Image 1 (tube, rainbow, N blue to C red):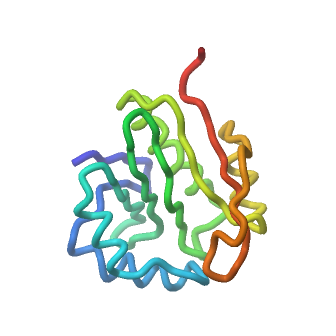
Image 2 (image 1 turned 90 degrees about the vertical axis):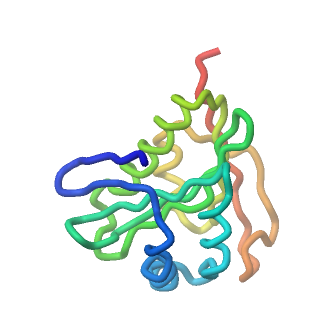
Length: 154
């Protein structure tokens, strides 16, 4: 199990007994949340990872991603409302990008709501660029920007 520590926060891989708490956080943080079933499927998927961000004994965020060949697909980056604007999303992204580099990934992709300007700014600060748009991607009809970042220098 991979873990990361940056006092007073630490990261560890999600386990089955975290499911109920993560699903509840998902419902608090997202207008169109993933179902418990989707989280369960990610937990058993061989090329998926969900890492939880903890503050003391409280789950305060998570990042979900899948590695497919030499590509990383970031599916979710979530931080509890009370813990936002503290650099925790940046910590989660940095964690998965470092792991992707170590695993030999060459590119990283993600989708983000067109109206989520804060997330778009965060991803852009990491070198992600918009490479496409998915019309009506989200259940409420909002479009998604497809963003990509290279993990190689050439």
